[in-house]
Length: 78
Image 1 (spheres, helix red, strand yellow):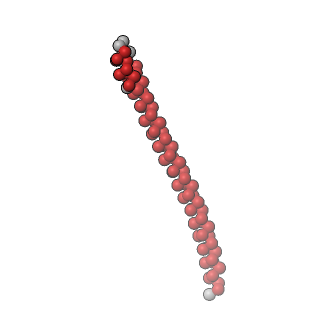
Image 2 (tube, rainbow, N blue to C red):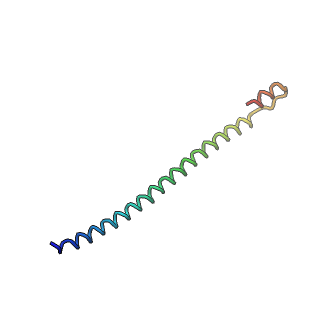
Image 3 (cartoon, rainbow, N blue to C red):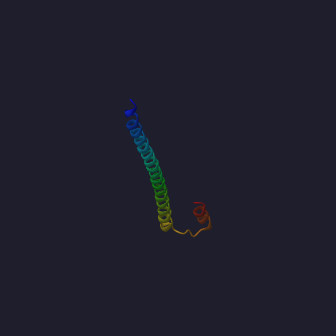
């Protein structure tokens, strides 16, 4: 009976060691995925800002400068 205890304990120690390695790899993978998600969100927000700036720039380029003071006040409000 005592002969089988050592191989079982040795196998158990090996399994526990492999489990720790897998758990660490899982933690690193999760962190990498969270970092990638944060980067994609930031890039998406930057793209949205860039589109907004482009729209405003097109609007400004197409805008006629008014000659009347009242019309200028309307444009300034926008």
